[in-house]
Length: 287
Image (tube, rainbow, N blue to C red; front, top):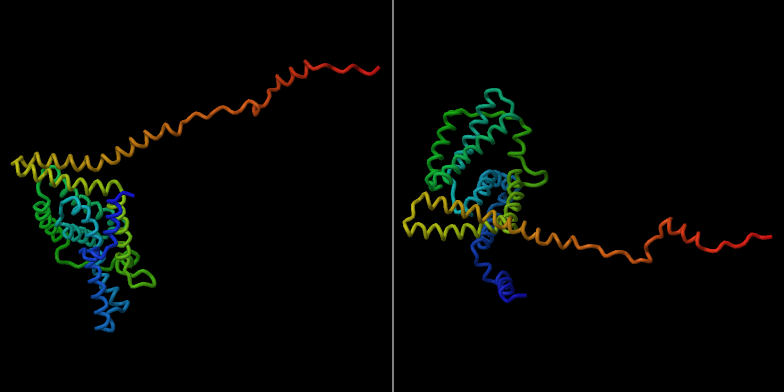
């Protein structure tokens, strides 16, 4: 094993690993839970934990989707307004008598269009994501008020509200939090154990370096956006192309010709058997 690999593994298991911010935050959370349980008898009850986690489910799901943007060195401040617009549209359509099975796909499509508008303004026009999403934050929030006003719509079908506010049977964990844990595991695998995730990290580092160089040399903003966009695309596509080429190079190894079977294993044809019997001497008939 290479020395640098052994050193990296030793560093992971060293006491200094506990000083990392993520481990420290996890330990601090455990200490807070222990202190709360000791100071208040009902703090660790199933009802209190379910109530506390229930307020975090949708926020955690939104933050999980934001992870990809943050890794790509971008930000979206309008996600809460998109959620508000989608919710207002759902309530208004339900109040108008639409079927919930029709409303849900439509609301999801509206949210996707809002995100697409943000993405096009950033990638096509080269505008900063911070400035763009500050503007669309106000736009989508205003549209939500136009759609629903100050009304409150309730009485949705129980079959759709129960998974949003109910707990997993036998646990104090709400369904949205359980969904978050599952998607967080998938996101972690994608970012850290796949070529796409590694290329995203590497591409962001390279893009940040090149973009800073372009800014220091007073290159036009349009040129900066074009260069960084191309680099991001290349960083994502290159690992997949390399994988395809590697598989094609290994493919001929499976086409090795099979050697012929030994001669003694070859069965004799009927014609050769007939010729052999014809050439052998025939015994004379008895007198």
